[in-house]
Image 1 (cartoon, rainbow, N blue to C red):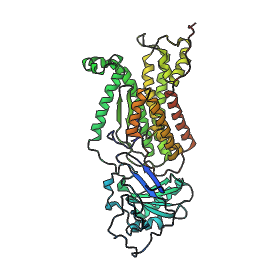
Image 2 (tube, helix red, strand yellow; image 1 turned 135 degrees about the vertical axis):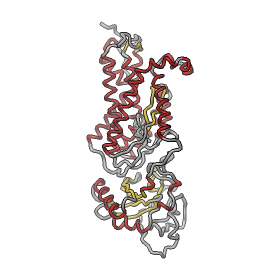
Image 3 (cartoon, helix red, strand yellow; image 1 turned 90 degrees about the horizontal axis):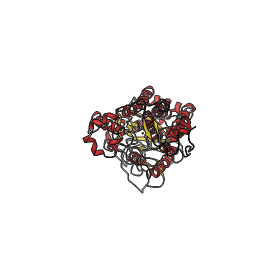
Image 4 (spheres, rainbow, N blue to C red; image 1 turned 30 degrees about the horizontal axis):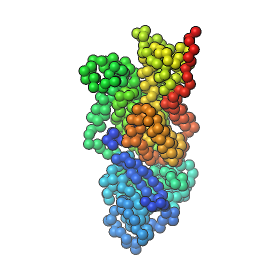
Length: 485
């Protein structure tokens, strides 16, 4: 579900399983999930005079950088250990915006020493890359405000290389955007804060349990006789085998979606965890939630991985849907459906009207190949994961194409529209609940968020969002009532 970013793999792809202030703040990340952080920093545009000697004895050198939200009306003071303004006047909520960090891990053992901060400011950052004007504490790390020189991607590469030469691999650099004034900001944190957290229940066990439940719902979805009374399933287990063909087709489309995510993720160096398939008795499966095990390098890589699954799923699903309309049923009977069902999807209704013509008449049931229904279910799964909301594939695509601020607004709009749809559609209702509790985001920071993706990848992202819209929107035009000639 990109996307933690599922479904088929919202490819979260942060969350491992469905377990689930003053007005002048500078930077806000509000991630409400278990491993996430709310970070608020006060807006201080003055030149930071943090390089001071021991005359500023507000804190002892052995005292850690304050990590909790405090207020001090006496004005900013310096932390002698880190050389930055003390947290007693800068609000920093506990936690971290980076994957896999728990608040209790941020103790004094991972703070950045004053000497390291001075190396970062005076030797790592420079006039030709990122000219630092001020700095603030940022949990176990430091946030640097300043002026970006040159292209963001090249600057990130240069600064990262210098930091590795001076400090080794102990620290991680992030080049982000201030959401309030759209200016660049650099964040340096200890790499040990980026270690993914372990779970109480082994991932393979939880994923296996969800997988077995999904197999059951996929079978149940394709046995209409059992759907009206779920309790009757236990008395008619032999009927579940009748749902095997449809379950295999839908599972195949889910597999195509997930494998495509993983192939592209491997190519760009993104590590994905075990997928957690989410069962659904309405459509068989809502897809999979897969957490990202490392930090995504940039928005283009994010776009590649997020779009890969839906593109592959839509492509294969579209071919199977066309085949279902063209090929006769293998038993010569097929499935009898009312034409009104094709009003539920603009794509399915349009193809049905194009291929069936005047045979498709309002109020006149027709026989179709069951492959139409099976492929349609797979397209719906891909489409709901392409909704530009939260950490769904569509939400990650929107973030990669248009940035954090624009995608957040689009996500709020999409969730609002989905909420309205949930009043009339049970699939939309349950999907809204899943998004709210598991996938609402925001998406964790990337290593470098300033550089836009290439136009060709943006075009692919637009195609995914457009196809998802075609599948989800209803077909508004009436089918012909004239008798077939």
